[in-house]
Amino acid sequence: MKALVIAPQPFFSPRGTPFSVYYRMLVMVQFGVQVDLLTFGQGQDVDIPGVRIHRIPKFAFLGPVKIGPSPLKAFQDVFMVLWTIGLLLRHRYDFVHAHEESVFWCRFLKPVFRFRLVYDMHSSLPQQLTNFNFTTSKLLIGSFKKLEDSALRHSDAVITICPDLRDYVARLGIGPDRHFLIENSIFEDVRLKGSDAGRTNGEEPEVPKANGARIVYAGTFESYQGIDILIKAMGEVAKQRSDVEMLLVGGTPRQVDAMKRLAADCGLDGRCVFTGRVPKSQARAYVETADVLVSPRIEGTNTPLKVYELLASGKPLVATNIWSHTQVLSEDVCFLVDPTPESFADGMLEALNNPEKARAVVAAAQELYETVYSRQAYEQKIHQLLEVLT
Image (cartoon, rainbow, N blue to C red; front, top):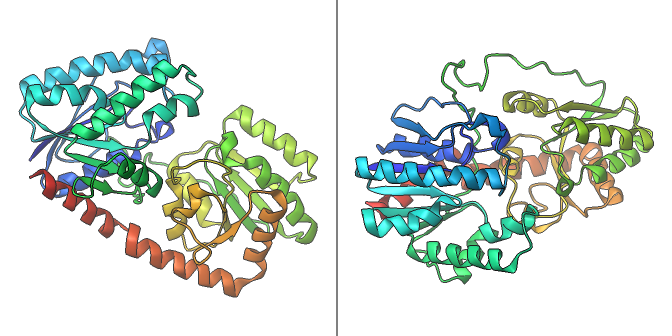
């Protein structure tokens, strides 16, 4: 089989988090699919034998493409449409695997070029317009909703990445015969061309040593992540445990500065260590030093991709009891708490002070991961998808 994968994003760029595209291709090639990837000019080439990468111009003078909808992304999508048509004119593809908004133009090209269409739906695109504060125009949001509904109806297969999206698609009448829930649940290191095997760079990460028990957060510092709640909770923990420190991995310089000020206000000088943004391999090395991992997210509907890695980590996890988490997590596999500083502090203290329960939730978390979300389970789901397309 031959496939055209379309990823309207800087591929590969860790800040753009296009890991799912990489893993989809990695497994498809394993099953004998020849893949052409069409993506933005920005990014680094990956090392997957059997994948040919096609790029539109970089337009570097316009600056980096940010996550979410933007005028710059829309501008580059115009060229993605032209490059898509060019590839379809030169090659015969069995199916086109369209990520995010690329399904909009592929839906109209499908009857012309007669390919089968896979919609890889990582979010509801009309919702993105409001979630990223791109627009409040009812006309624009309504137009995106009509395009999305049309794309869903005309796709031969639809991939969703979490139960919330699965239920959303089911309500629109997409039956299980062409709907596949394939979570972004594997997290092997991405192999970039010209890099050492198994790393996104060739450097060994430097990991600060813990001075006592260590709590680790790794992720972005956006407001919905609840970093302020986490730091305030750490202030409560510090009152009861003098041997505990917190390592916070991620955040832009401005975000880190703001959280450092909050930590100082909470009397946590020297108890909170901030690393800023680091490569994924280094973040993983930090996670391995943790006694407790945390996910203080306060809102959202899609399951955070890092949840699967946290399940498999072998470390007790404290997470907020919100739908974004509880689609996957339960009290059997983690310490679920309310999204308040007091409740989060209680959860972290229980994870530290109750080693017997911590061992039980870790064992259950690892069993859940191996059974439902492991590399083997992921491969089976991709194989089922390909069977529908043959």
